[in-house]
Length: 264
Image (cartoon, rainbow, N blue to C red):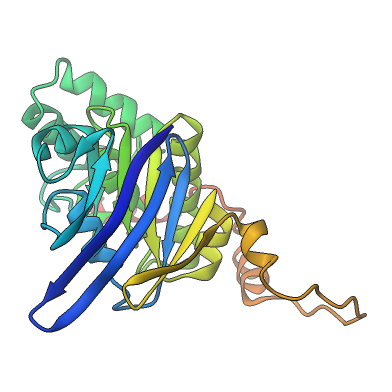
């Protein structure tokens, strides 16, 4: 079953053709990565699918609703997380969650906020102002806010842009967990390793068109078979970073402890 269907979507700004006929499907409950360089049209496409922008031609349905004729139903079915965390830095983490729950007119906003703080390992930081959060914590809070109301589909537009290596790992784990719980995730990224690690399917968007779409294994088959040769493997920069810092990919609360010491 397809959660998102895109057929022949085109979009131009003046004489600049950003999208030149885009086609793809996203299976419900999967992670679909839209991979492309800056200017490829990724954000424009996400804005069209989230009803923030109208296409010039073509059709798109999200959760079974046409984005042009039924935008209200589409908005009720989705959540959008942009390239920069949209949190109120004056409010605490818990207050940010409470605000969104109340704006959605949900019952028991306090219980909803507490549940999300626990799911995203932010319980200890819940009473602190979001301005004191690290980049990774702020992004986790941003994604948690996106989940209020249990939308079946989430758009993540370059969610790890500007984050440090540990924060990127935190976000990746969060996205994997969401998909494991049945949420459909459409992820845009320009990072090859991010698409490789997260996505069930990868579509490469280049100059406004999808030039290839498939699983990682299918995309690798497009190249000639690898030659087996003996080489001395050198550690990657990630290996060095994790070894030196002692990071294991688990959420790091050291910044929180330091912030509490400074507040005292």
